[in-house]
Length: 193
Ligand code: 5GP
Image 1 (cartoon, rainbow, N blue to C red):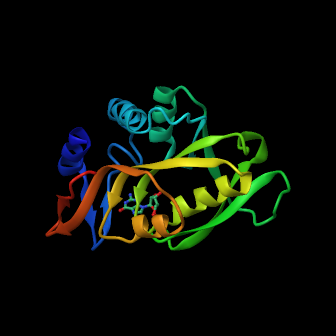
Image 2: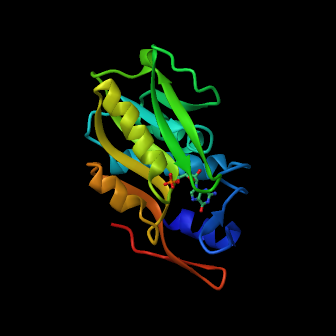
């Protein structure tokens, strides 16, 4: 998505070897117009798939997921990151390791909001090592829901997330921007599929 690539070039900051900071429009301050355009693009990429629900993880997935849900006309459910390890019978749960935060979080979705009748689209802000996506897949699998695909705002294709997701059985993964490499603090983009 050209608009997103231009914004990453303008406002993204490369931190260290493999982190892109985009907190001026996605991860802290949010640009609603850009989010709306991304939601419309997700809706275009996943049209005609009878999606009944969009699933994401708090917090940074919520803005693009809400805009996708708005364009698709379906509800959005965000998995909560629970601090408590106490298991509850009425929630689906999965453990997700975050490389950026270097800790594991349990994510959970109340059983009232996901069921075997659902066709779900998974959305997240970044695809890096794939742990967040695999956690969402685990929640959907527990519910017996059908996963129609995954929509990612920014994929770092030099990291193993897509491969891990494919090996876990996820198909139909679309990213709005794909980063091939960081070179001298500059972002080098991959072609989109
Ligand atoms: P994964 O689970 O695929 O390793 O990473 C996905 C999660 O890690 C995303 O939801 C995002 O919050 C965070 N993340 C991974 N890489 C980056 C990055 O380069 N920049 C930012 N801002 N977040 C990242």
